[in-house]
Image (cartoon, rainbow, N blue to C red; front, side):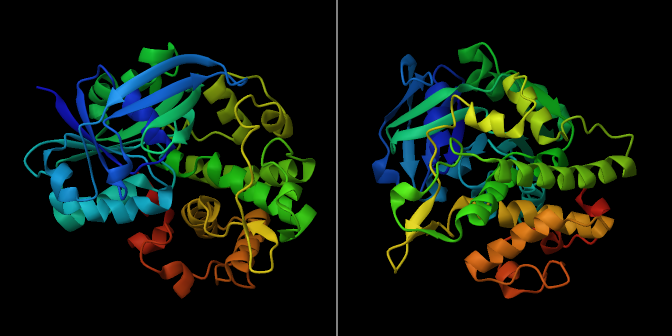
Length: 401
């Protein structure tokens, strides 16, 4: 009998995951707010950078529902494919329906933002000691949606991947049943290595430093608005030295936090706490030594635009509701800032980004003394931010798994 795997969320990664699960041990269903838009078969096209189709895949979807009671009780695996800031809300929505009488594996394809803290939160609240948590360090493929609920596109998987799980002894099972089948099985690369802790994923130097530093760089060059949509630079293709220098400075501040944690616990394995270029070289097996060149020469990023919306005055501005804020500020830079404060590490670049974000969002995030406004209603709103204090943590030691 096949095992039951439920995907939570309908992001681009869901459109890639379902076809790549074809031939696996799983019957696949999806928990989504838009069940009527999902087809019974999901197709995936594998493109090269020129748009040529290198391969096609197709996977069956046995059910789609917006009601967790219809899917979650039978689930053996639950995999999240949604923005980071939605993880906790969704976990609390599905937790009451998880079977307490068997081992249930709950994971996400992107482990930024304290996935293990979120899992522990629902484990405690709902008595779910049978949960095994896992998370990729980075989404294992570059992927997009062609037609929602029907067709996705991937530009292939990363050359190497890593993932954490707890209890750690379950990693070989998860890898054999799921992880290997959705990367290496199809592409001959992207084998998943075991990371011994989730903290390395929480402090990843991927989206949370790339997106926020680039947005600040765009503001420094162009201000808050553009007159015409065509005036808006491409997010990566037009990447400039100002954005590269900001990313480098932000990366350096994250490195200070990571190094301080490593110094506190030299006995722990933090090999996956890498700086930006080291992580880029690991993931893509590249030889990049220059941040700007890693973006402008990328074969998979050049078609990505800057997330903008037209305001009431007809001008174009950064979309303040995009995941660049909701994921990468509240479940990214704010977490690193809180840790830096506990460690006594100054973070002028993070501070500048947070001041820019609070101006754009018109919220209270950071004070004039460069400290997080932990008691601000804008940050303290339930589940809006992943700052460790909101889980009841008081020290760095509380955050370490």
